[in-house]
Length: 328
Image (cartoon, rainbow, N blue to C red):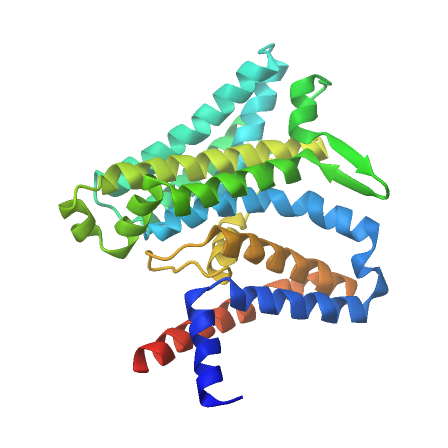
């Protein structure tokens, strides 16, 4: 490869940050399929597509929030609390649509409180959302005495919209996958085609300059904290209805896994750069790694080693690409 072609290739990777994880994703799919012929079987793909959307939905909102330079560590706890509230209300006689609306409202309110504490009280998002993680997780454990809740006995159209599935040949398409696709399109449009997307990018790139140009950065961040928490609650409800169980310890560790998916997809931790397409690739990448290493016979406890190595590799690749382009 000539130096000119090499530079063009590196420039392409630097300008389209989702390309690097896409190349790794394709390489891993080939490697895993060569290692186990069942990797692309209908059963395995159905299992993958049933688990992938729930963390993916949280990752979509986290991408928008991370693009402003903030992040939310309380999403795993909200993921557990929202379905618990939903089931407790339904068990006490509240209709499912009302219980769903209230559970989502509580999730969004937690995000609003996070946003107000970060922007209004000038406390870092790390400290605020770490504290909120402990509070929300504690509430979930306290109101359930630490026990999972009874499954929802409801076969209404709303239940089907949230956790139903359609069989297409040997594949089963769950409703959560359709929600993930729809929300991915919405978030991509929001970030790339709307005025709010420009505000998000401006807020993350240079906050003081954005404020000087009239961008309401505090409202943008608060709104995205609320959206992230809302998506976490919604994902938790989808998951609980799918598996017919709501546990107060569900979602433990999800906050770091979601941030890893977003960063691996090409969104910058420092803000100002975000890509929804990259996040979708990042979600697929980490989920396929988990699935592939288990099918390859590697102990599941080794999963974090692979995740850590890939995140580190992506950070090094992105850093080197940006440095190489600047030098040129």
